[in-house]
Image (cartoon, rainbow, N blue to C red):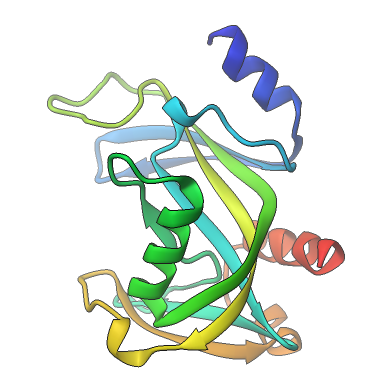
Length: 179
């Protein structure tokens, strides 16, 4: 790991860590951090946000039924992180964003060899996570895909009771305090 990435990781506060398998062949360690530093752009492949609207949080339901509260997606060449976040949340949920600020990040470290044709940073990559406020709902801006089925605003107390990953609830609580 180079000095720039090491220094960036040290700027955050580790809150959780786990190992996952993607696609049955990519083994990763995911470390979740709170922090407000901007990541080294060369390591960023995607951005995410916890999106609030008054006393509600935006919850996305995947086609497989799983729920999550961090919509977002891949950075396209030439995009700034804020541009990516706004575009991806709009496409995924139909909501514009009026305010964004850094909340933390996810650090992914590959535990397996680089897959053939892999086009993302290797062996480490970062997904910044932002705190965001929803602006306007633009239903026709949502782009149907094979991933997100629907998105709804739910009261914060309802979200706390949902069957979502514990680390997402930890991020939610941190976002509420930062808000």
